[in-house]
Image 1 (cartoon, protein in one colour):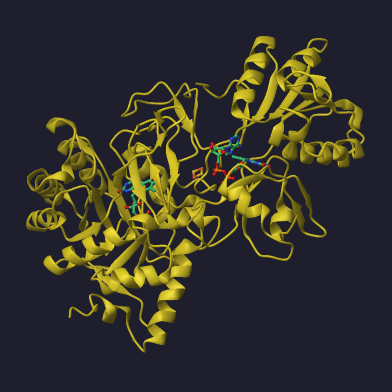
Image 2 (cartoon, rainbow over the protein chains, first blue to last red):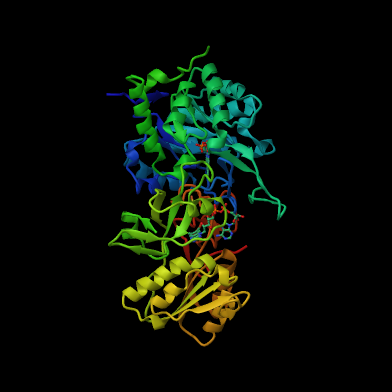
Length: 304
Length: 252
Ligand SMILES: Cc1cc2nc3c(=O)[nH]c(=O)nc-3n(C[C@H](O)[C@H](O)[C@H](O)COP(=O)(O)OP(=O)(O)OC[C@H]3O[C@@H](n4cnc5c(N)ncnc54)[C@H](O)[C@@H]3O)c2cc1C
Ligand SMILES: Cc1cc2nc3c(=O)[nH]c(=O)nc-3n(C[C@H](O)[C@H](O)[C@H](O)COP(=O)(O)O)c2cc1C
Ligand code: FES
């Protein structure tokens, strides 16, 4: 028997494969296709305090080996999540990680307080790649100080472990990682999407209504992998890696680089069964390398 | 035509499938195609497509016997045709495949083909999709082309307007480019008529998890406060559509 379970900040995951925020909605659609209890965990679409419609179309565009999205945080809001989506998710034997986003520190705080009263939440993932209206729209995650501050405020109220999800759109992601850990983050997940855009040369206009969007998919994998490697080498907390993971071999790369678990995003669009195929492929890889536990490959890339 | 197993058994008119021709990352997303015909007995499923870009070009290059990833059936589909009302099916270009399936389904359920007016239009004769199959169903389709190279000269919307004029109680089922559907919707609103429109959108996932395909619709009256205070509500074309009621969509 190969042991696929891992531990993230005191949360036991039956396997290290989770679905990434914004790439799984709240689980209902996928649950019609397969038993989502087979997943190590799921991360919900990022919630805001009030519901958000999001940007008008066009919201997505395909790029070479990737895609850009400007969804604009369409979500049902914290209340509807707690009353309608969470009871649904509780039926499944998989770690439910709730992603929260805000445009002010107090929004993150209010949501954390609401979630503290709820059962069935394994952890909170704080999406700090959002514009902070109190600081001129600069992303919380863009600088050490605001990133640390918002995590500290969430951590003070949280009853569940807090995972800080980092933005790759920074000068030095390791500095941000150190700051959120110093402020209490129990784990780190990375990377969120890279800012990018596409221009239609005939119409001379942007292809996204919001002009710019977030790049995801295979195109970002090497960037994500390097960032995961650097961060996992620096911080003591567990790291969850993501960015362009399409297959089990991609997932293995992230784990060898130091990730204790992985999130699968864009791949869920292309093939709904991708997360399950990755779990199976991971088991095959371990068998082929005579490993008894997936924990034994975490961070095991040769350094010299 | 695909050997499509359960997809063919479950398929309803107006639903679609996502097709991924290769495991490559280019193009990355699967492509949506309306179900043109499905035979629950043989499990054969037919789609009909035009070559636009890399996805459809790749598909056209595949040979009989090769495997492709199919996913579906997806989407809400058309409500069944109500035999008590006059019915007009308006197909522009690649809007024909799902409306053929709808008409065939209605005929199989006992509706006389003469109860349905089928308008099949395209830019020119070369772009008209296989309208012969419509005659096989017993329909007498009204063919039209923008340039007059086949059938009446005029757009589907022009012909629809002519066909609507003498009628009072009628339901319109329309599928085609969104620009055409917008015109159809305005026409129906003017005549206070009911209808159903099958929309097109870019579809990264096709099953409701990404929100990439969303279109603007009028917000429900009981929508509470929202964070972004927009005047629209968004619906996902892949799962809350692709069929929308006339008057539902907020056009640009
Ligand atoms: C629910 C649904 C059902 C559909 N059913 C059918 C069907 O039955 N038969 C069929 O042929 N197509 C159908 N389509 C459209 C089909 O999905 C697209 O034609 C296809 O995705 C194009 O892929 P591509 O890679 O070839 O082109 P891309 O590389 O994606 O596009 C190439 C160029 O063509 C343009 N283009 C792409 N699609 C269209 C289009 N539909 N109309 C006008 N310009 C376009 C693009 O803007 C771009 O400039 C359907 C779409 C939806 C949403
Ligand atoms: C359509 C879409 C929506 C996303 N929404 C969110 C979100 O709400 N919150 C968040 O933290 N990340 C969001 N992400 C980012 C993903 O969770 C992930 O970090 C990123 O896409 C990289 O992984 P991937 O290449 O596997 O998709 C979204 C990504 C996509 C493609
Ligand atoms: S295509 Fe992903 S939600 Fe519709």
